[in-house]
Image (cartoon, rainbow, N blue to C red; front, side):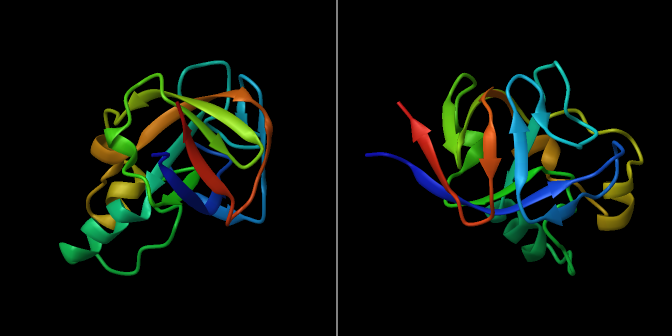
Length: 147
């Protein structure tokens, strides 16, 4: 049975360590990442993804007024538990194909996200991908886990 989710938002920032702002569509460049985003480049963490399911956990512990992009994720998703996907998994997201390269990350001490939000879930539940096939991704696009 295929795992299917969807894109809730595409988020971008021109500097690292700050909250990202939603945009209407993202142009993802092969082996680079999201055009115009500070985290794009020729490395293994070109795109970051975080599920709305992780946002709900933060709300349950009392953190209020969260917006998509607050954890500096490029793609806010729904319907797939991202951090359970093994490294190497390929995802078809909109027109793109992206490969999971890392689950979680070390958090920068005192980053704007933890200062604003109080706690960051990205180090445990965010995932990172590299863009295998570029293209456009929009809110509402389907995310399909490829076999």
